[in-house]
Length: 401
Image (spheres, helix red, strand yellow):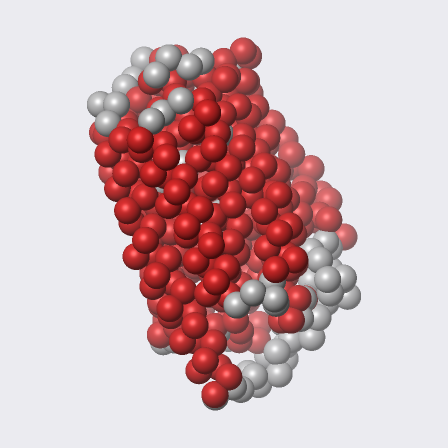
């Protein structure tokens, strides 16, 4: 049978887990409004400074399978604490780097370490919260990450414009160190008899041999490319139009606020609305937001777009995320890791590809392509999730031994 719940609340994630997710999200999004300032300070083109973001995302994504297998084998909390310690050290080193190459290398290590936190936290929720209320608990965790995003996008630009962009790396690094100590009291979920003895190849085989898991990973890759790959360019689009970095960062704070507020709506609707409907509503919001900013870039349109993207992420991503926790429950850590890997590899590829468009100021094309791509993503996600649900009803999946 699936491992019994750990001795924590079965309705929501523990506070320490939410704080760690907040810090991880803050670090990931703080760099977006700082890219123009970093480029100017280090005397490099904007398209080159984007590597500080895309390199982070790529490392964040590519290390996910490793973190997932390690958490399945050695425990969720142990892996999170080790990763947070590494992120704290690498984040502090990032703030000291004098040239772009060294900065990118330090951000790659930071991303690789912070990459363990949210996916392992999602797995922890999957281990300890019963399926009937799991999406609600996951939206609580998403809400904490959303607050981190909102503060990062606002404070990142303020710190870069009014103080120094290096402070934007020091703050989350210090918080990660505090979280490392705070998570000592978090109980480790039981992993079931003999599970710790399974080899890494066995976990990988369980996941990669499941066709529904592969489909969810493909959807996550596409979502990451569309959503996270274009997000960093909302602030740079404003800065290209003459808006100061501190103000541009405040413009995309609406993303985190929208995500936080609408995650609460999703929590209420979960179990009442079919999952494919939640996905369709999320995709519609994302498409509308990207189309709006493709038509015109201003503080007003960027703020509205950021708000709609936050709402779209709450509806669509939380549904994909919950789906990912159920497709291979006997190797949930590895599954969630591949899911997150696909998401952030997609974002890294897209942000790298979009860099030259941003350098040339071709934001209408950049955001227009992203808006168009949301339509097939949403259609495939909703239709296949409906099919998956029907098959699960007809042939209930047996619980693993």
